[in-house]
Every structure is written in C-alpha cells, then in structure tokens.
Amino acid sequence: MGFKMMRMKKLTVLSIYTCLTLTSSVLMAQSSSSIQLPTAPEALGTSAVSGTSTTQINPIKKEEKPLTIELGIEMGEKVSKEEFTPKKNTLGILIAPPYKINETFKASGKITINQDNYAQHETTASDGTLSLAINGFKLSEHLKTTHSLGTIIPVSEKSVKTDRLQGSISARNGIKYSSDYFDLSYKLGLTRFFHEFKQNAEGSPNIQYRLSQLIELKAPIFTEKLAITTSLDYRIGRTYRDFERFGFIYDADLNYDLTDKLSANIGTTNDGSALKYNGVDSNIQAYNENTSVYRLGITYTY
Image (tube, rainbow, N blue to C red; front, side, top):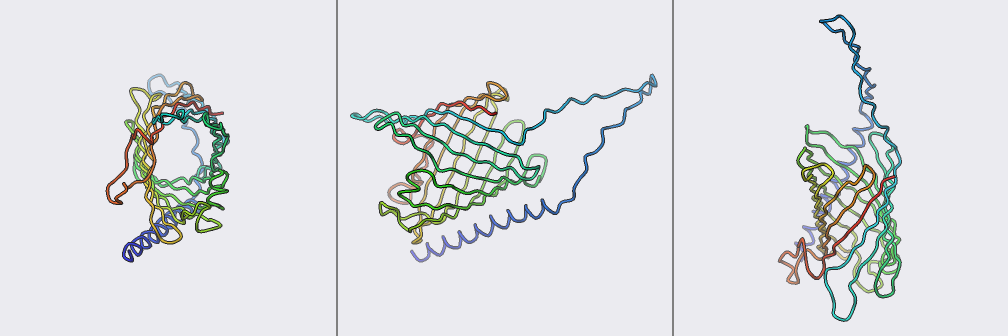
C-alpha cells in the first residue's frame, strides 16, 4: 500500500509539473511572439500575351463573430429496463456561449438543465464549467498542440449539498492530428477539487485530485456534413486520504449538419468504474445493457 501511495504521489506531482509547465510555456510563447502585419494583396498581374492587366478577385471571407451561442436539446434514455419501474429518460437543454477573445485565446462556458420524465419529474441543473482555450503550436502540416484551463462552478444538488464542492481548477495539454480523412487528439489533464469536507454527506470520500486521459476521434463519412465521433475519457482520482478511484466515460455519436447553424446527433454513452470488483480486470466497455444511455439531440448555433 505504501509503494502504491508513493507511486500515485509521484504520478500526481509529475502530472502537475507537466500540465503547468506546458501551459505556461504556451502563454509565454504567445505573448512574446512578434506581431506579423497582414500582407498586402498581390499586385495586379500583367498578362504577357495581351499586355492588359488581369485582376484576381479573391472571395470575400465571411466575418467570424467573436460571440456565438450554442443551444442544444437532447433526449437520453437508459437501455436497461426494470420490471416495476418505468424506463429512466431525461430531456436536457444545453447552453454554451463561446467567445473568441483574439487569435490566441477563446473562452467558453457550459451548463445543462435536465428534466426527468420519470418518478418525481424533477428539474435539475448540471455543474457549470468555464474554460479558456489557448492556441497551440503547429508542429507540422497535420500536427498541433492543444492547451486549455478550466474551472467548475458547483450548481448541481449533488455537488452543493452532498459533496459540498466549492470549486476546482484544471489544466489540460495535448496533441491533435488533422487530415482530410480523420481528426485524432489526445489530451492529458489534471484537476484539483476544493471541498468543504474530506467526506461527503453520505460518508464517501471526496476526490481531491483527478488525472484524466482523453482520446477523441472524428471521421467524416462520404461527406463533410456526416461524421462519426467517439471519445474515451480514462480517469484516476485520488481522495483526500490518498485512496485511488478509477473511472471512465465513453461516448459515440453520428452527427449530421442540416445547415450551417443546425446539426443533429444520435449516439450512446457509457460510464462507470474502470475496474471490476476484483480491482484488477478492466471494466471499460463501449456498451453495457445495464449502464448505457442512448441519446438523440439537435444543436443550433446563433
């Protein structure tokens, strides 16, 4: 047990150093980089044959708005069915306003309002999140680094009343490969949680640190409007008393862009403990008949 605790502490310290070092290096590099003035349009060329000038008219680029609002509605229902209780299904409304500060920084927020369509038909809210994306380094034609900072605003009843969560701070660094055939990214993140107590109201230990490894894949199918996306988030948590918790979240979606502003998706989600009851064998599954949720949603960007 002592060796396990020391190994976890070394891993946590190394992860903190890696995340903070990479993020700070990006900030310093972005702030110290020289400002490049936009180049003037190419001069009008003169035809060697006719001697007359040939004007090249460049297409007018659509002005990108710094502030947009994403509104999403998604219906989720558990696959499992119990004999004496109705299926659990929930309607979620997502509000996410991203704001492009400049070419280096992009801020965004997100919160989801959920309406349960079973039992007491309760209306709840998820925890709010704020994040700051930092433009990374372009390593090659297809490779680029990714960096972000984030925090959680406790809003949900579980976080406020049960866990007594006061907030969090996180740093995430990664690398992304982009091509005409698919986009693949890997992100390593570290989150520090702040709780009022080391245990929650139910007597379970709260998580102090969480190390996450996120893999995301997006691939178009025949056309850019239709794409399949999948992600796996593997999490290692450490409680205030130095015990480890292993978890995962798996998502898979089929997305279709109906218009430039409207898109639809159908997918499935599965999450839970990353280890089985014996604490050794992997419990990571893309689909489980008892824990998976299938989803159907639509998103509008204003």
